[in-house]
Length: 210
Image 1 (cartoon, rainbow, N blue to C red):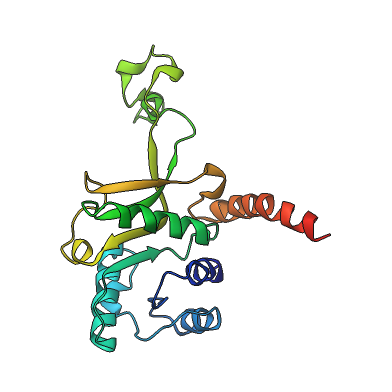
Image 2 (cartoon, one colour):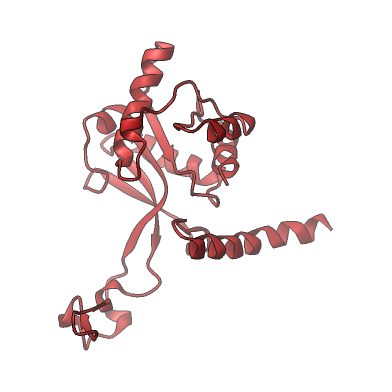
């Protein structure tokens, strides 16, 4: 799975360095074999399951600048759990950021499949409540379409990352991706669903090869 996003990053031709941040020797070896660099080991204090991504990004930026005496202007964090990201996505999002100097971040996003205003939650009685009951009688087609962070990649300017500016603000732009290529992988069920989506995308290529 790690090889896919590395391949997409290398294939974009945009990066001076494609670096994997990890504290794990096996992951480091896989990353190097896939074409990435692992010039430093991630410290234990930012390697647990609760460390925010920004801490890892900022450590990587500071480490690269210190190791290579090279200032980072733009950085892109690509999650290892983003197997369906393509080089074209990375390039198009980069172009969007470069075209707007006032924008700090461009991140992958996708539309919700159903209006979020009609969301339900289970209450303590075991029945359900609407999160926004004021939309109980509103037709779904009349509600605003909403989108979410796709959990794939985040382009940003060096200072915006290091100053810990919020990713989702009026200085950020979404790069919209088709829902058929968006699946965060946190559980075995996520993995199985991602495999099905991947098969759908690889099938046309396999048929052409025949």
